[in-house]
Length: 91
Image (cartoon, rainbow, N blue to C red):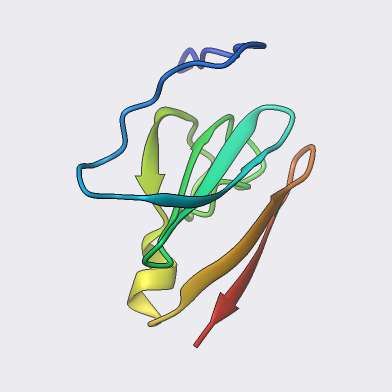
């Protein structure tokens, strides 16, 4: 089982270069950000597939949600719940 660091305090995070974050939401054990370009990145505990990567893997590193890119969708808003993630998208 992968170890996922759960921190109750702010921490610096490295996102890929040239990405500007426009929105952030934190759940109880996961985080999501939307970039100015409408890409969604998620990380943290993924047991209930709330990270949106098509699996239940957890990750300490931000990963882009490729489904939105493949479908030509841009994330506009995101809200993380305790074990869920809600995303408003634009076509």
